Image (cartoon, rainbow, N blue to C red; front, side, top):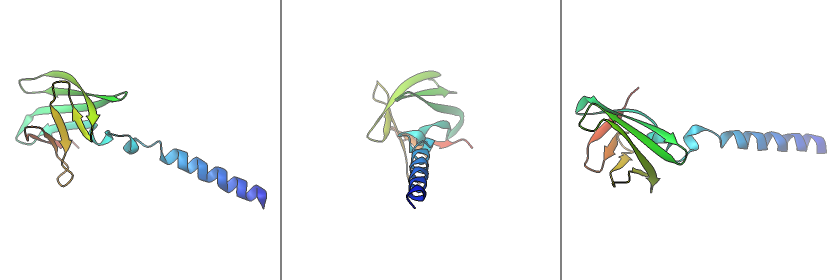
Length: 105
């Protein structure tokens, strides 16, 4: 009986550890991926995680290049205070100026 309980306890601990390792449990993982601007499909953005920070790579507009961002209060914020937030109702990524991007599938 004791041996059976130990096996169940080890199994429960193993499942618990594995469920905590999924990518979706990482703060900010919802931002990771490719995004295209809703009103101009030539403008794209790719967001990658780099340690605790994020790298945002933009292309197709006046700003072509990379910038870093940090997760603050659930939003991505760049050093020059640009911010990105995901609208929970539509799933779009919005800038502080209201520009919307949709996830590329």
